[in-house]
Image (cartoon, rainbow, N blue to C red; front, side, top):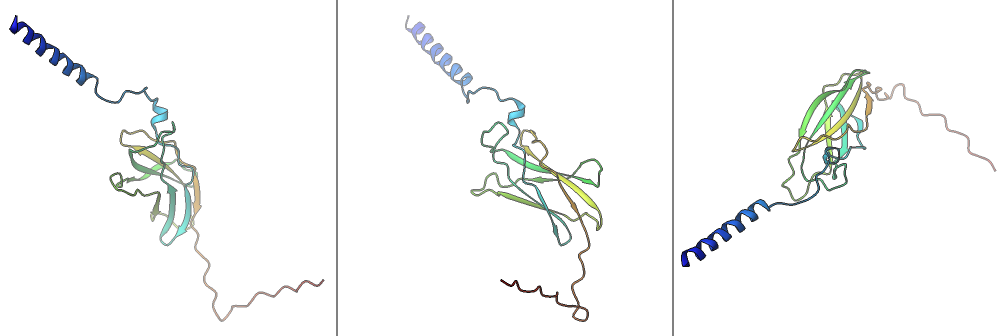
Length: 166
């Protein structure tokens, strides 16, 4: 009888441990894939820079479903020349996940552009699990040669406008 009680105790402990192992983890409702992707970037901007076109955008901080995002992995910059199709230009990894202060604004200089050409860009954010945001707002930029600075020999001041009379 003594051995039987000990066996039942061991069995009860083993059963409790097994149930605890199965019950571990966070329980929540499943998230549809369209809500698990990063929120769409809506503030992509392009500007002239020495040596190319500078792109600037803010880091997405939430998933499209509204929850705070903590697993941003990289950005994929898409580029098209003129009216051509968008194609991946570069993947920019996010390396600040473990830092106290994260980067809020990102920039990229596209130095592989030509003067006189028109380019279109979008940015896609991607999580560690491979969920991709919808493409950002599209920006368009044409590189032009700036006008030469005025020379002292042919520089003239603009004609002043007459003062208003009352």
